[in-house]
Length: 288
Image (cartoon, rainbow, N blue to C red; front, top):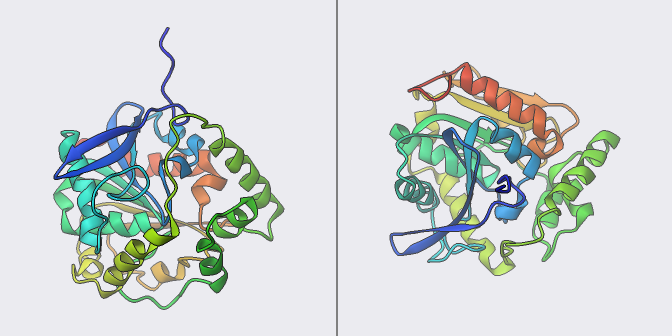
């Protein structure tokens, strides 16, 4: 009997296209959902329970950006380059339309794809991220100090992705950490410190917003769900609140006693929110 493929045992595959090789994993069946990873994140850094819950209803695809972790090629210098990885993956997998998700930096990538290539996106799911352009609420200094350490340990994970003053959040952090550690074979390659400049270049481009993505969010017809923790030390949800009544298709969910990784703290609940949003905002036969 064939072993069931899940987030812990799914094999790494490679999409060879346009002179690069994009590392990706795929689990579940159904309408395709591509998820864009965070700053310094790899294929191994998604909580497997979150992915498996999504895979109950969708074909969930995760990937590494070109030139980072296991993906091969020249790393990108701007957000359109990062977004191009999604476009190339869609072409390689022969997909017509996708649900597009992104966490943190991946949320930036998802917003560029959604606004520059709207014909490819049925719904967008943005977790722990911020709108394009300039914002009023900045990240906390402790996030930068912690995120730029050569190696992050469990104590760092609590600071980066959870709410350190909440006993519940710390407990959930340990559970998520242990789930991620269950993968012992076909491991991804960590992103190194000397590669972080590529994210910074993308970030500078995202703030300048030469794609006019911020304005396009005010006119899009693509349903967008934003999920944030109430203590988001990287991208405070206040940056979305400022845009109230200007984003016609965007819904914002704020989870109490949670930080930058609410989908790792409450993987089943967040996956349920995402599925409910999708089925209640059906577009082009996405779900039924």
